Amino acid sequence: MKSAREQLNILNAYAELGSYRAAAALCGTTHKTVRRVVERRQSPSPPRSPRPKKTDPFVALIAAKVRATDGRISAKRLLPLCRAEGYSGSARLRRAVAEAKAVHRRARRTYRPWVPAPGEHLIIDWGEEGALKVFCAVFAWSRWRFVRFARRMDQPTTLRLLAECFELAGGVPAVVLADRMGCLKGGVVANVVVPAPGYVAFAAHYGFRPDFCEAADPESKGTVEHLVGYAKADLVVGCGPFPTPEVANEAAPGWCTEVNGRLHSEIAAVPDQRLATERRLLRPLPSLRPVLGAVQVRKVDSLRTVRYASARYSVPGEYIGRRVEVVLAGVELSVRHGGAEIARHRLVGPGEVSLVDAHYGRPARPPVRAVRPRTPAEVAFISLGPVAVAFLRGAAAAGATRLPVELEQIADLARAHGRDALLAALERALAFGRFRAADVRSILAAGVGVARPAAPGERLAIELPAVPVRSLAAYATEPLR
Image 1 (cartoon, helix red, strand yellow):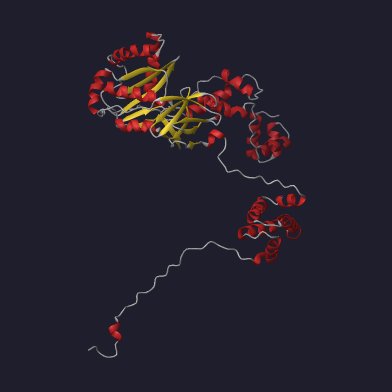
Image 2 (image 1 turned 90 degrees about the horizontal axis):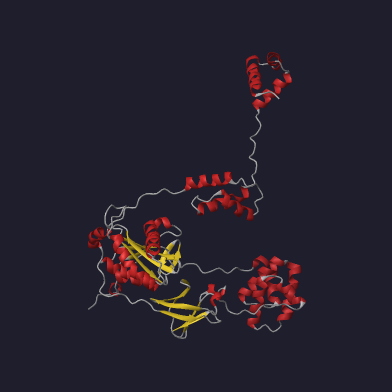
């Protein structure tokens, strides 16, 4: 095996001399070796295909975990997950993880600072610290903060605290930006959030526009996310513990006054002073607070429904026998369990029923009598397929008296004319309501000569020329006297 330098000397000698034997004599080798080196140079071997790695089947799993953790998960934590999925390689998973993190860093979005306008945005969110539910709101421009505690994170509680925040701030912002919390979200269509009707009515009463952040994207509301963490660390942990939300709400106003009166490091200003400037741009408060829906407790019966105002509303089947909360939200009814919404319906009248097909696992359909062939003739006819079943139902509805004999004769026609031709004849007979074997036999005998009815087309519009019109006096034979 010649080294790279020796092969280069052989190629240079052959390029100068043009002869295998002369180049071999100059390089001290045989002419066969020179020929092999030259031929290998002229027709190089194809590139070697990359060897498969044991981590190749798990690249998607690794990439998904890296993306879900924003590139912070380690190969040590990914190894047990890959082992559970069937990975049998060594513990050296770091190279595959490093490649996935490099791809994630290249595809990761870039950031640009948000410059809020005064009086425009109020950002709200819920947090949890043990049994306490923490409601946080912050004005984006002035950084004025509002924190309160509650037992539930439902719609009436959220709207009540939001109204209290407006009253303390002295005005209403143009936009209220919220997370996609279930109590304010009525649905999602093509990633567009539809606000709940109760929230829409509340927003119309106060005159602001409801807006929602992107799904699973806490970075789009980092201001209020920071406030939630600050309230937990400084208020709940620093001033607590609080046994009940009522006790916590006694300390929350004083804490808000303290933090709103200090210099904010981000804006280099005092939030209370900035709010005094921003308040001139806020919308005025309405004269009255809106009436928020009351919570009523109902038990889910065996029909997967709850009763409200003499009407029934369906819920998922796993809640049979449990007690749920029924909340009236505008023209809709919200059913909740454990703080989460499990069903939503439009209000119906007394004695009526509102059902959701997803709660029963399938859409509602009328009862259908199954076709069960018993005799050999029936089995042969039904084996022709759905067209035969439709023909049988149509013939039965038409009151065919000799149906068993007719079906046996029709099934025998497949031997002479073939299955496809018989199915086409059955479709035509069904379309024209002819259910005798003689009718099907006539259609088969006609073959391609039968007429194919077509739907009527559009009317033919013809523009006629205008004709001059004369009075009857022009046709008189003698002048009028």
